Image 1 (cartoon, protein in one colour):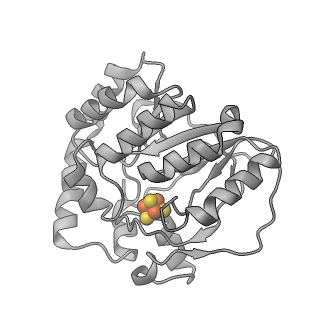
Image 2: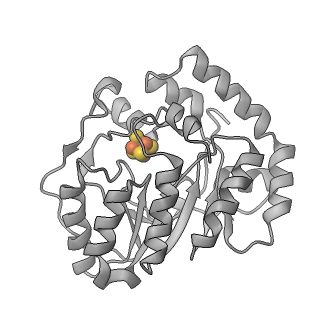
Image 3: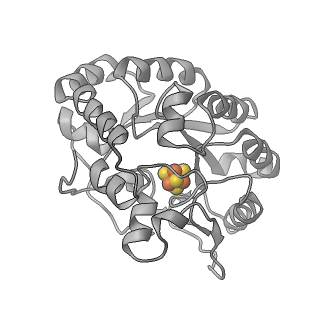
Length: 266
Ligand code: SF4
């Protein structure tokens, strides 16, 4: 898992060829955050100040050739929605189709649903939840909403007639509990539930300053929970369910061909 060499499309690039981001930093402070890792490696932030959300000025609005994902390196929070929502509207007015990805705050989703109503057919929400247990989420994603709030946001967007999907990546709980999460969420999904293992966890945790003994012990649990045999068994259980899709980390284990990357941009 850690440090494996990646080839083919993986991460957010399995979902969208184009991404758009207007904030540097993220208040949610997830221990495993890849965006934080990259920003620290490129000297844009320190791990300690990643939670400061700084608007990025002067980005032009493009008409992308296919659906664009927003955001991919931050989230939509009560503190930044006054910056992110106008950007989403600009992208939609320019003719784009959007994948809006978030660990959702219910108040933000209510505002998004209200303000984007004329673009419903151009918007697909994808909400990330890695465990049905809010204590587990609190450990890994200390400032992000609880599981209950995220599922409430999913139900709300679904009830408002939006296209909805879920990301269970990274999985943060036992496979039994992941199945519980799937069963709770699936009635409110119009599109798909994507399932994936944590990727390159230890290097990310080290760079993000989050590799303490308690966290290391949990990473070891993941190695047992997500053994190849366990992943194959889960795949067998869900492989005929058209709403369950597998991220690259699982495709590799079960032998599904991984698409090659096209001309992708960040
Ligand atoms: S919500 Fe996303 S961008 Fe924000 S800290 Fe967590 S993983 Fe990083």
